[in-house]
Amino acid sequence: MVYSEGSRFSFTEDVKPGEKIKLRHSAEEGNLVTFSLPRPPTFATVEAERLHRKQRLVAAFRVFSKLGLDEGIAGHLTCRDPEHPELFWVNPFGKYFGCITIKDLLLVDHKGTVVYGTSPVNAAAFVIHSKIHEAHPEAVAACHSHSLHGKAFSSLGKELLPLTQDACMFYNHHAVFPNFGGV
Image (cartoon, rainbow, N blue to C red; front, side, top):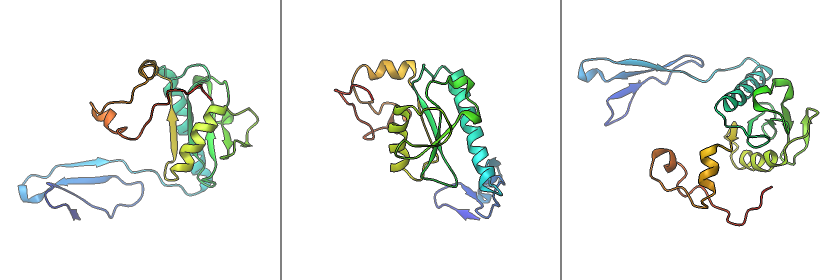
């Protein structure tokens, strides 16, 4: 049992993979409150983990499509391969997010070479996501969209102000490129 000083909650760290974490209100206050948080899944083989990641990537494309976060060939989602972390899975050039299947996904290296798949890779996807995966080896996935509100705000050429919690996460971690002409 771990108890953080000043905290009224404690949790157990001796949880087996796949089990839920239980958080309990401190016994000193008399009433116990328990709730569970899901744990990431574990896999028997790297192939099973790869399939899981690719299934979730395809599902994310469908969600982006349903929410209107896709626009023609703009926007990309990627996930790192579990066996070869220097490679990542990405959507093919020009395929509508709502129709992407596991068979459509491309495995790409940081040089833009398609290691697995037959479709062309989107140059912008490669340029943006290869740098993200290279700079953040701990990141399993990355996504970006060209949402209506995001495009409207970007046309102002201003940095986000830390006015909301959502914007605070970008404080001093983004930039405006005033002369950017596209990829």
